[in-house]
Amino acid sequence: MACGCNNNQKGENMVLAPTDSYGPQNVNSNGNGGYGAGMRMSNGFFRPQMAITTPGWQDMSVAQPIDPKAILQYAGLGATLGTFTRSTNILQSAWGASPLVYIGANTKVVSYDITDAATTTDALQWTFNHQMVNVGANIPSALNKIAYLRAGAIWDNQVEINFGASTYNNVQLTVRDNLATSGQFLNSATGSVPVISFGSGITGNQVLHVSLLRPGVYSMVLAMVTGGVWSVFEMEWIVIK
Image (cartoon, rainbow, N blue to C red):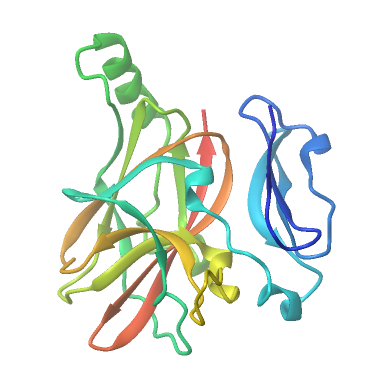
């Protein structure tokens, strides 16, 4: 069944299409600062697309952010278990370019139930049949952000990312559109944004682990700081079964 999440701002709600339904009846048509699960046609099916839907940039700043747990069952980075928090430092006034890139070598889907040979084999076969990232230099940079992932709480999507030689602090995963908001003001003069935090000291090749609740197309970012410069690594997750 569809999930409707009301908030304190008038006319705002988030609608996510159910796992097995791709019909346009799940589109949120509210244009007054609402959160919509837009629909994107792919191979004859509609896929939910989680985004903050507003009539213009003026309204984005007063829209409430989206909780990434709406699609995440689990998230980790390397050996670090992600922690849900409301970040008060992810909203920055200046951003630098991100040098992060996907790596294909250790990008795969793994079953969490390692005692079940059937799901272990299923994960191997799914990875064989679905190229998850494209690390080739012959594609436009706009396509480098795409990753094909698998929906289902039992599946550990492992996406390897090269952080390079720099060491990054305050590494946080959140919905891309959240960075256009002013955050949730909770008894404070400082805006806060719901994120999954991976802490500090991140460098080199790291595997991002995510398990996802439902199929869809989701624009996510890893935000982080190094040498006083904040940057974001944008990822477009195309989540299929």
